[in-house]
View 1: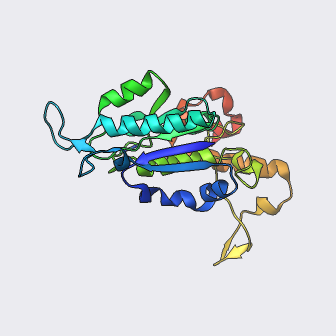
View 2: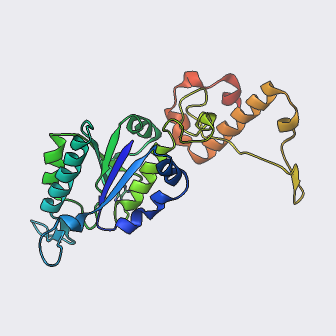
View 3: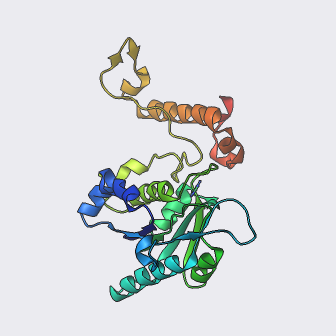
Length: 250
Ligand code: ADE
């Protein structure tokens, strides 16, 4: 998968060299290219923003540098024989980023991110590329960040770990919270490892019972309990057919 990021803070994307995403890059599973938006300006001050039409606080990102950056990125992909990219515009006004969207994006061969600073990007940029590409305006949560770069890190990590061969153990996203499957509507429950006793605290006996049925039942009950406590909205929204008699008794 190829990923391009256009930003005025290229150094903000340094974490893409680390850990899971960094390793995927080193293995050639991810081709990440970070571009400095100011490299697509032509004035002495490398201006990327201006005052908003209609007045109001803050500044708006000018359309010209974004247009030049995106055209140049698209031309480079075309020269390499890639089909059109999917454009991801991080913004608190976007649709919520979910595991389902991560799964959808993991199937795309090429993503281009346009993290903005200030009050956002001149709307005409999104209109222009919306007519040429698949565009997703995406929010990572109901809070406002100072810019979209942190959202790019979040979305990239969620997508990269779904790519074939990126996670060491292909089973390890089977039980993820929000993963499709038997416990699709529930959050993951607690986990334990050795030693069996730590600071006077034991692990739940059932986990060393060797009884798969009882372990499975326990995991489901814990997942249900945690979901009821932390995300009652998920239980209310779920298909009642996915709950069993035991859940309902809890
Ligand atoms: N930019 C600023 N806040 C954001 C958010 N919550 N999600 C995505 N991009 C953002």
